[in-house]
Each structure stands twice: as C-alpha cells, then as structure tokens.
Amino acid sequence: MSMMGNLLRVTRTELEDYLKDSSLLESRLYDNESDEEDPKLADLDKSWEGILFLLTGQSLETMDHPLARVLFSGQTIDEEQDLGYGPGNYLTPEEVKELNKEIANITTEELSKNYDAKKMMELGIYPNVWVEEDMVNYLTEYFKTVQEVFAEASKNDEAIITFIN
Image (cartoon, rainbow, N blue to C red; front, side, top):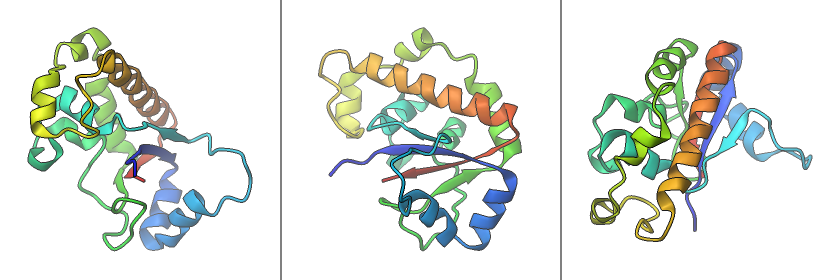
C-alpha cells in the first residue's frame, strides 16, 4: 500500500466547520460522486517525507524542526479520525502566510543540496527508494507543488489541511 501526501486548501469557515464536525471533511474527500477532482486538493504522491527531509534533515520519527509544520502542523482536525493514515493536520490562514514566507524563496537548487540518498535510506525516509536515479528531481518538483499551494492559499486567505491516504 502506498502512502500519498495531500494538501487541501480550505476557507476559514470550512476549517471551522471541519473542526466542529470532522465527518464533513471525510465526506468532501471520499464521498464525491463525480469524476471531477477537487481543484483545491493537491496530491504529493509519495514525496512527502522526502520533502520534509530536504527541509529539515530529519525523519518523521525525530522531526522537531519548525518547517515540519508545512506538512505536519501537530494540530489535528479530529484525533479519532482516520483519513487513510491517521488524522488530518491543519494550518490557519495566518499560519499558512507565516510558513509561506519561509518556503517561498527556497530554490530547488538550495533544496537539492540537502539530498543525501544514503542518509535517507538509513533513516528509512518513506518510500525508501532514494538510491534510484533522478529522485532528487522527483522531490523538488513536488516541493514546487507545496510552494504553489501555500502561495495560492496565502493570496486567498485560506487554511491548509494536510493528510496521508
């Protein structure tokens, strides 16, 4: 089974509604009858822990770096809810803007310098395929997606919900 990272942009009101009733979030994500994808939902494929490693130099188990909040804020929608691999995390619009300022100017060149396949394999960074060719580009391309989501959410005064499914 694969663990896919996701970022969902939501309005402040939607976030408040999901915090009051998390089943509304689950319905939004999984009860969609149409074939159309949610334009506010971004799929990070299996890149999420690799991106966190490039940002922090740490694995998920030992993560204590402030930039880890980009994908795991530590603020959960509903601790009891399982969106695939645990509950969703959220950032308020203000927190999104704060983090956007920190990640907006990180270049793919800078991020690439933090790539260390051997260390990533030793730490068990998911999906543990870092010795394969061109994985650094895989991660930097998905990091651009993260930057785009944060930029758009900041511009629109939106919150972000992150989850693994």
